[in-house]
Length: 180
Image (cartoon, rainbow, N blue to C red; front, side, top):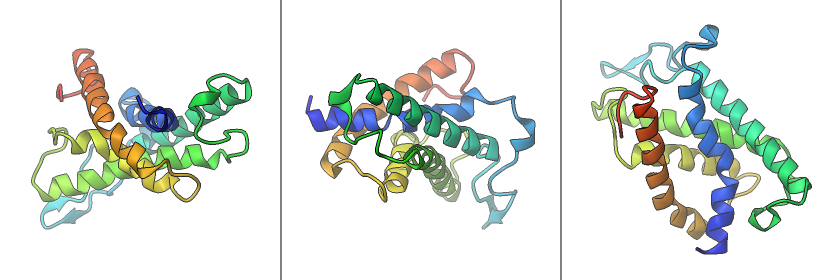
């Protein structure tokens, strides 16, 4: 596998984990269980839907930041240095926050389009459901660092397959409504 692809996959670990965070915090932090769209409608449909909450966005942002902080510690300990596309010690923690926030915003933007296409919340939209977080994370992180575009594109099939696998596991554990 191309070294740039491996570095790009490692760079997006905070986004992968941030993407899983909303499912893991379901049933917790009730004060944040409020829809991002505030119930607003467009053309008779919710902007995003009830599934997109402040709880999920905040959880994903915090997880993205925490995962980036762990990557920084790993890097500073001299481990996995060959996978580092950046100097984690010299890069602001804000990059982790942006990866986590971009993950949630990318998912929300995809939900906006799903509602316009009359795809119900929780119903699968194959490929877009698996890539929304990556595109959002890439866009949000880009002002600080963006992996090479070709490496990012080469990662997408890997991310689609990995996301489907994680979703199947979540479904089997009763954490997801659909297996895909």
